[in-house]
Image 1 (spheres, rainbow, N blue to C red):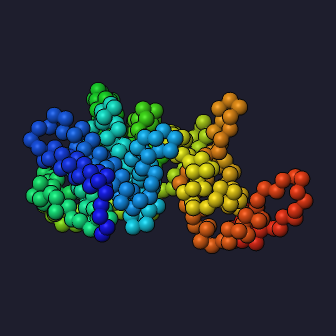
Image 2 (spheres, one colour):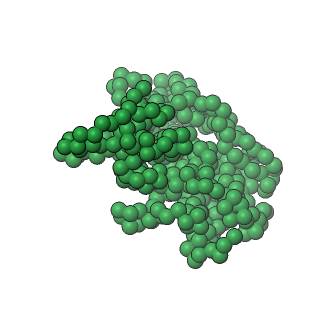
Image 3 (cartoon, rainbow, N blue to C red):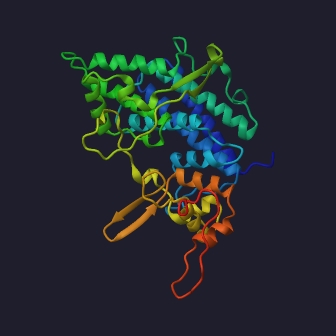
Length: 374
């Protein structure tokens, strides 16, 4: 492996230090502030690790071009999903988003995390941390942290689906008439809403509107699948025992994400979406990330029909007289996939913008996947 830069060593060292802090807090004797320290430390460990990975892969983009500040963990995840030699899977990205969502709720307000769920998340985090450390740096976690100090639970590890079912039943009991435990129930709902970030990047923020809707749905007798549909089909692959337990998230089918603007829809299972976070790329940024020139990127977007403002590939933001189309990861993936199958020069000739004063015949597009000439 080539000589590492100062930044890489520093960021990886900070990642390991935060991981040790989180593990120490998890196994510690003091319950006061334990959940807070565990979540903040584990989330920070992944932010530093992913940025160390982006540095060693020389991807660039660790600093935002507009603000000139270090990018968020959310953007670092998006980049590591695309980088060769890293390629975070959907489940791996979900583990980090879940930690981030729980950390955000705990840092800025409060939540109650079931001990079994906290242990599951801590072990999943340690497992993924070691996987990435070895995948990118060729190192093992045991080179830095003795196995005897890794998170150890008081009960045998349970699969994610069983933990969610158990917590849902506990919340339902807390919300029964006469219990006067609504505040604790809402705090536990926040933890399960944060867990939905495993399945959906748009669920990475927990909003009080979502907490109220879920609470209302549970009081109305709705089932877990109805209230938390995104978690349907998610489970855990648990290997080993004691200090050597490995936990990885697995997905078996599941329910698709649904967007709606219907005011009469059953909203107990719907989440509010931060559109500015989901649609974070402008046209120039999208072109740069796709690796094509900007005029050819415009032609490719027309070829694929990405500018339809359908909230899947694009969204038009309007502020007074200003209008700007923004794009999500779906659009970037569609462009990168298409570039493997089409001749970009032919796409550009068929979809380029021809000035009105130039009388040039524009041939129909014959490249695969054309949304204009279907």
